[in-house]
Image (cartoon, rainbow, N blue to C red):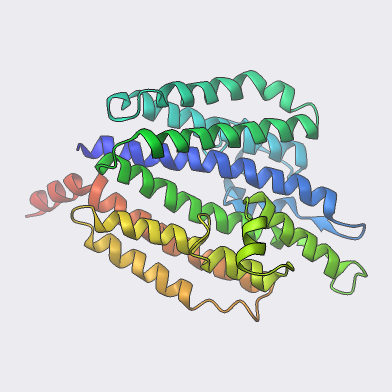
Length: 320
């Protein structure tokens, strides 16, 4: 397989996963605005930092407010991580690789792109329309995943798609988990405990994890258990550990993957050292930053080994 094709498959999967999880993140933000009591506030600037988009946002907008941030996350093509931009990039990558992919995949992804374009204006009118719009994006993305899982040969192309999906999903799970860091609520507030319980239940629901959490972890919702579940529960497909296990399983079947496996094992070791019992929002935020660095190292290893190997060899030959 050409390195260019492998990279396009990998990024197609990452862009689609990012689009879906950005929709989930926005739904969680909207729910949070409804859940927080008087005396609490949502730090929009902090929220942008959680999403890793604060510097880019400041290039184009003066103030961090709800309307501008929603537009930036959903429809602003100057933001390569906006939903519209991600689906557009995934569409372009798919168009060039149609012979490697299930026959109907192009139609599904193209249909998703056209749906977003045709419904952006209606979705911006009110929160209800926006919610229905985002839920439809999530549902259409699920149909795309199902098509890949059910109709695609599990060859090298499939493994690159799975690698991209898994690393992006792990990253976005940690970012959605970190949303509560942007909430300012005094601990002596009379509704502090019930509000935090509601917010963490909202995190689970935004990741379609609420029922699974109650079956596998605990009936009651609290921060240590939710964090432990979303990081460590290997049986839940959106947990960080499950995603890392999926990455490792792919790499075991791929050539020349030794360096990437080392990076993946380092991330798993870091994950095993997480103690959620004494966790607070600040410590969680700091740990998430570290976890994202480990995921970044896995991506860098994939990029170097599979997408830039020819460039590295050519540079070595020139130097020699």
